[in-house]
Image (tube, rainbow, N blue to C red; front, side, top):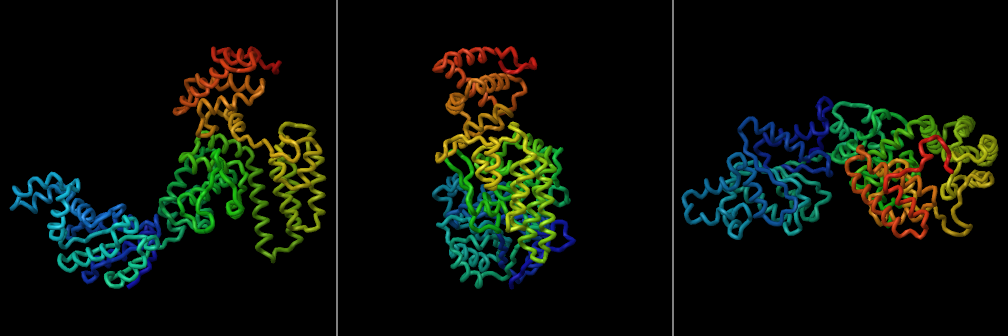
Length: 567
């Protein structure tokens, strides 16, 4: 019999409710000897079984023995684990062997000391007594698909058959059968030995209910992203939620800014844990030699589907989590707070993307209305003099008006709003090349683009390490890469001009001597100080060397902090 468990709506843990009821009814039926519970990784199989065992154990009428087959290579190892689990309340395996071998204890005394460490004779002893010791137990075999290749599914089947026939054992087999190496063998065997099959296939909403038993704003913000990505793995959702909860409390979970952070977080983590099903081509994230995320057409398409740009402010931040294994929390909080100060721009960006989606997928939406909405977005975007935001609005205009007249008109309006040569309006050549070509041309004509290379040569914006150094000087070591060694700092210091060197060195040396230096940053501060010492001793520029020595001695420029400009 094949049962697809449908969780009860009134069960407090809905993804497990139907499965537990199916397990309970099967285990109470003495004619049902072998039960299989199948489902994807992280769907809640083990949790459902553990809660069922706990409920049945309280009656005292059932004896259980449980084992995870993760990495087990032989039946002897499996039997040892089952025996030890069965007798864990009365001294474990050593106590069991004492009890079962009381009559021949003198002869087996030397073996007992080896039993729990899989000594050479322990296997014989286990094979001798395991059947009787596990008689009339309900045996739970979990993680069957994670067993070692040396332990075949046919061996496990033989073990099950032996214990059910000779010792009246019953079994619950828990597995992700889709990941079973010898899955073809299992398909032939299961029909012979399994009395009842239960399949746990939760929907993303049900897995969310497990992680968020009490709905809150974070669940509401994550839900559309989790559902779109098809994530049912409860462990993956818990990890995503744990990282999301590190965000500062003053950035609301339902804000547009927070969504721009959550979208790459959900996508990248679900790819990393292989938990998403919406984008089959994305099996892993790729990084270059400098540890930076490599953008691919498939990744950009997925980002677009989730409503964020692969060039957005949070992309590299979240990618660091995937590469280093930890989120740079201070940098994340600082960036979220900075971006939240532009919440209205984030809202407008999302509005533009929603309108593009509507125009693409809802042909019944009148073109005249789409044009009106697109022009409104472009007018509002132009007010912020935010080139990336305005570029988003031009993309919408270009879709609703193929003639290009609306785009040309919007760019003319934007030109009138542009400031002269304001620093806030400047953009790198690399970023300019990703904009609408007419917009990029306008910005270059107004000398607002910093092209760092001659025409035809690769753009040097590219020195990502130098950009990291600039970010460290502004926000501290939380904004740096994982590889902040003395050699790395020295390499970056040698690239700085006098003004950059003066500001960077004095600020970071002062920051490194601060009592409020965050835990874990001491090593970075020492590496930076050592780099400064090395450069002061070997600098080709004697004036630079003198400035570094003064900074290392604790001196700072006299004008600094007096409200004067640099000399």
